[in-house]
Length: 97
Image 1 (tube, rainbow, N blue to C red):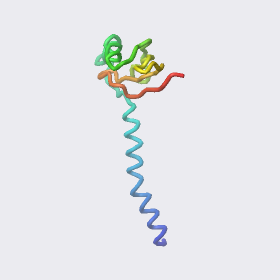
Image 2 (cartoon, helix red, strand yellow):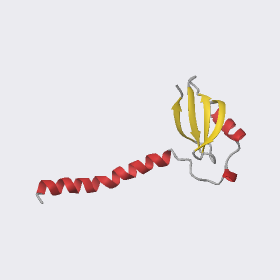
Image 3 (cartoon, helix red, strand yellow):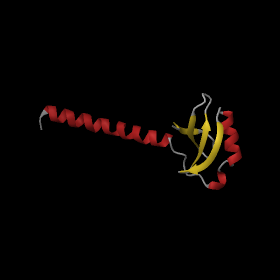
Image 4 (spheres, one colour):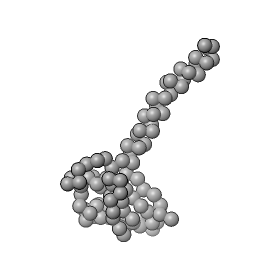
């Protein structure tokens, strides 16, 4: 094995854990976890919590273990926001076209 090949291989081996950790971290940020349903906030509490964050909630449903709200944000845009069902924290949002 040449020195150049060994250097490239070593760099790849060193970079792989960093890239893998970044991928897991980003997917964890968007996760609502898997808390038992009896520990979740009520739908009314989620609506209230979202309103405190500046959302005018139009609809609430459950999607992928999260509360998904359809709302108008503080800038007047239609959004879908996914909230952690036990904390009410917003884990991801997307603009609704």
